[in-house]
Each structure stands twice: as C-alpha cells, then as structure tokens.
Image (cartoon, rainbow, N blue to C red; front, side, top):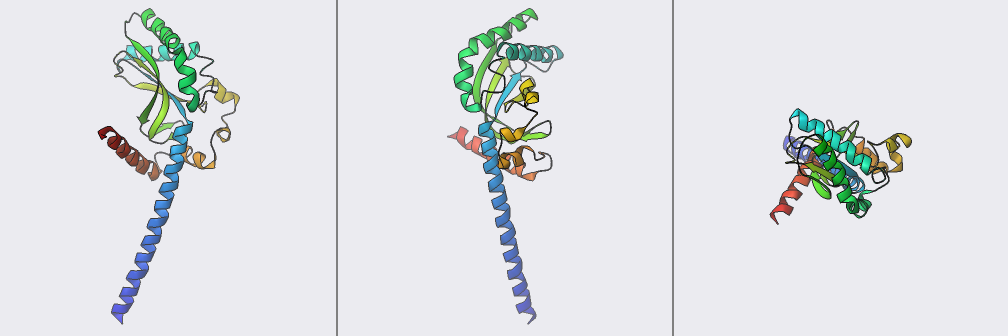
Length: 210
C-alpha cells in the first residue's frame, strides 16, 4: 500500500513538473519572440572612441555632437530601423566630414567612419528601459582604432533626442503591449533576458562558424 501511494505521489510530482516546465518554456518562447520584435523596431547609435584615455573619451562626445548636428534632419526621431540604410548612407560622406573637422580641430589625425550596420549587442539598460541581446540596426561611428568605450543611445524610437521630449516619452506610440513588457522589464531581475542572451550568443557563434 505504501509503495502504491509513493508511486502515485511520484506520478503527481512528474505531472506538476512537466506542467511547470511547459509553462516556463512557453513563457520564455513568448518573451524571446517579443525580444526579436523589439530588435527589429529599434535603431541605435554607437559612437566608439579611439581609446579609453580621457582626451579620447572627450573627443568622442564632441564627434557625437557634430554628427548629430550635421545630421539633424536624419536624426530627428522619424527615421526607422527599416529606413536607416536607405536614408542615412547617402549622407555618409557629409557626416564623416563633420566628424573629421572636429577631430582635426582638436589636433588629432584619427580616421573616422560612419556606417549603418547590423550587429550583435549584449543586453543593455538605457535608463529604466532594457534592450534585449541580439542583432540591431545601428548607426556606428568609429574613431581611430575604435578601442575605447562607446556612447550609445536609441535613435528610434527617439529615446535620447529632443523629439522624445516632444512626444512625452510615450512608448505606446512605438511598441505594442508585448514589446513594452520586454523593454520595461528590469534587465537585472528578469532571468529571461539572460536566457535570450545565451540563445542569441549561440546563434551568433553558429552563424560565424558557418
């Protein structure tokens, strides 16, 4: 009798475990899907310094300001990730010239490049928002060796621009409920971000090896 009760208990535990596992898998799957939609909707900008020395880090911010000023009509928060390459790359030479002027004026001869790329980025928090790991479209400005810390922000939706203030920071205008649950989750306390990052890293490794 005791053996039968034990067997029955083990079966119940197995069913409960399977149910919990299935629910968890569904939760992670839905979360990962919404992460992929966030990545496809977001346009980032990264300005990478020549090195981590103080002068190079200061120069990075000066270059950032020059590029944003010269490309004011491009970086007004209306250019989406899908439109970035088509609308920004024709102005590549102009943006690089603005950056180069600042660099030369500061007394350096670093090369500089401005490109629209699709690259992998780790999970990053931007203020109270979290951008999940994976590939994003980004405007990438590289100064010199590009070996220093980078300044970055989200250009679309316009989270780091005056346009963001004009819209009152209303994310509902850009993200649906599923995407909002992702970006408004805490990257520090939401374990699913780590799971997504592991999956995306494996995908990157597989893609690189192929």
